[in-house]
Image (cartoon, rainbow, N blue to C red):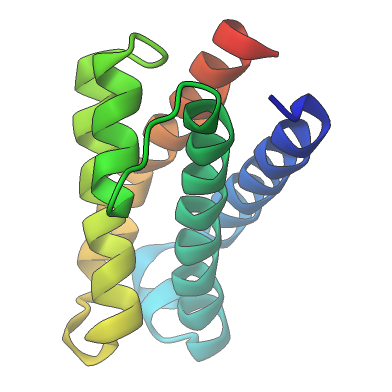
Amino acid sequence: MDRERLERVLRDLERAVKFMERALSRPLDEFVNNDEAVYAVRYAVIESVEAAVQAGLIILRGSGARPGSYCEVFEMLGERGVIPRDLAAAMRRFAGLRNLLVHRYWEVDDARLYRELREGGLDVLKRFAAAVRAQVV
């Protein structure tokens, strides 16, 4: 396993989470009316999921696993005990959100995105990074 690369992608994930924390510290109405903040948070979600998937792929490559989708990466990490199963399910939902942001961005409800990230979503990403570190770094 390439531990140096794994550490790099985990740092990228944590950097994106810290950025989102700052951007989401403003009130909801201020956030949704600030195009730069909205687009930046959307991109930070995409970047954080991409980093989490890369971390998962680095770990899974050593076992010969070949996930066919982002969701399968998290499912396999849960099945192998790298992350708890409830965290794997939460990360699969993040993969779905990433797909929505990339492929159907015009359907995104930014107020809902704001609330979900503040009310536990960012904690899921932090838990993922911590769980991966605890298992393999």
